[in-house]
Every structure is written in C-alpha cells, then in structure tokens.
Length: 255
Image (cartoon, rainbow, N blue to C red; front, side, top):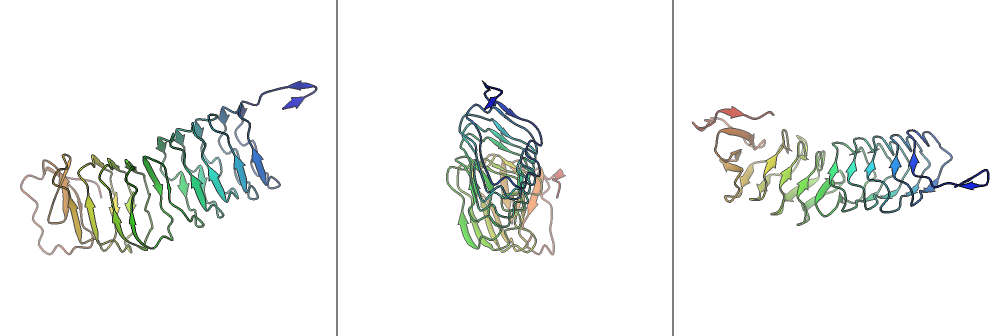
C-alpha cells in the first residue's frame, strides 16, 4: 500500500480491523500478510468473497468470520490451526476448501452453518458434515482424525463407515443426536482414542470393535478398553434388561 508517497508492505491485520463493515463485499489480502487478528471480519454480513494467498498466515483466529456473508472460502496452504468460532453462524456459507496444511481445528470452529452443502475435510482431518446430508456415508480413506462435532446433529445419515486408518474419534464427533438413524457402527483396528461422549445415535443397536485393535475391545455391543478395565460406551439403541459388568471392570468412563 502507499501512504504519503511511500510504499509499505502490509504484514498484519489488527483485531476487529473490519468489524461490522457492512459495505465491504469482497477483499483480496496481500501476499505479504503474516498475521490476521481475531474478529477481523466479524459481522461483515455483505462480505461474499475473501481471498487469502497461500504461504501467508498460519492461523485463522477466534471469530475471524463470525456471521460474515461468505458463500465459499478457501483456507490457504500454510494455515496449521483454526481457532474456536472462526466460522460460526454464517448463513450463506456453502463450501469450505480446507488446506492440507491444517493440523488442528478447535471445537466448534465451524458451527451453525445451515447452508453448508459439502463436507469439510482435508487429507487427514474430517471436520464437519452438512446437517442436511441424507443416506449412507463413507468417510474418506485418508482421514486420521474425526474432529469434535463432525457429525453432530446429522439425524438423516442412515449408516456411517469408518475406514481403517482413522486414529482418533474426538469428543462428540459421532453425536448424531438421540434422534439419529445410525443403527450399526464398527470401530476399525487403527483407532487409538475415543473421546468422551463421542457417540450418540438413539438407534445404535450394533457396536463392534475390530479384533486387531490394540486399545479397545467390544463385547455384547459395549466398548471397553483393551484390558477390559474401563467401560467406554454402550450402544444407546439397546435395551439392557439385565446387564452384568465383566468382573474385570474397575471404571466407567464419563457419559
């Protein structure tokens, strides 16, 4: 940019830089950018396009685009972290292209996106499924982490296939809700972590873990740690008239 005859490279954008700028409809950020402040485009309701070049910022900060009017957004390569509520309550957002450089997405970074049409994921993280998706779905084979709330509220999904290779099922990631339609779920051998309150369907009657899994085991549609000392989760569509804890159980996990 130029100011009083001198040229300057814009390397940062302050917090709330464009907050409530309702006349802003599109913006292209410079290749020199290295920092984006929190609430940068908060409530820019008429902002339909924002282009951030690759190899610029490394984080999408807190509430960066909260209630903005974006229709489609491309997270640039170089971003490794997306903070909580970065993309929340965006009524027009239909698609998000997630850079493969993204390694961590905070819980509810993408939240209340009623217009979303396509799943949000990259080569390793599955972040969010459109709540409107109906029918069966198979998670892409490259996915390593099913992120927090990824399938939260997806009451129209009838079945879900988790591929071998997934290592982490984060908290509330398979929380289809008590009105969910998923009745069968199989945890592959590769899974190393299942977070608290990770699974809820309401109709889940069959819940199994692959025999080769070294961290978890299943018995009578209940998941335990491999040593059978901790009960993790029971299929919530089952009716347990007479349930007897295995004698090895010493602890019951939260939820």
